[in-house]
Length: 191
Image 1: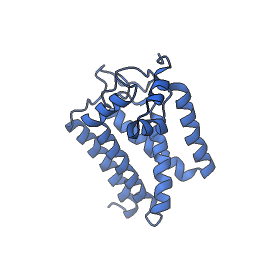
Image 2: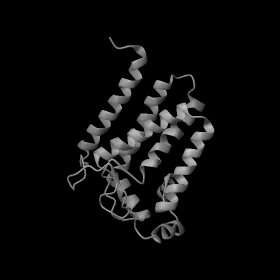
Image 3: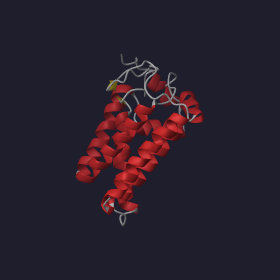
Image 4: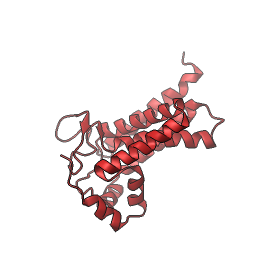
């Protein structure tokens, strides 16, 4: 018999599975068209971006977990952590699905320097959800100062390495600035 405390974990697993099914139904590639699944893909200007398990945008998804934990702690404290995890997973899953629609992919290609971006593979989307789950788990266990240090550290690191990160990604998708696009394009691609 399933214990009541395990129901949110089962619902979370169901949300992840449903996301994979929806992405496959949408026509997303299960894995990279190259035929392999790599643990890390570090080339920034490549059609294999967002096709493997982790890449330069994995820290953004980890940060989502920190943000969702903090926000839900503020507004939904009466809910158990398990049900807050379900809500966070639903939000992340909704993002992964909407991010992989033709409209969002084309908008992203238009307003950013990611001309070779053709959406995520399903395995990458699931790994992104996994990174969010890890961020949520870490945020629950770490002191606030450590969580903030990780978030700031990852943002500074990715901005230094690829001139992008969660904050710039949100900015460029919601309010694109030519100045930022030109600054991002001024770096040589990582090989």
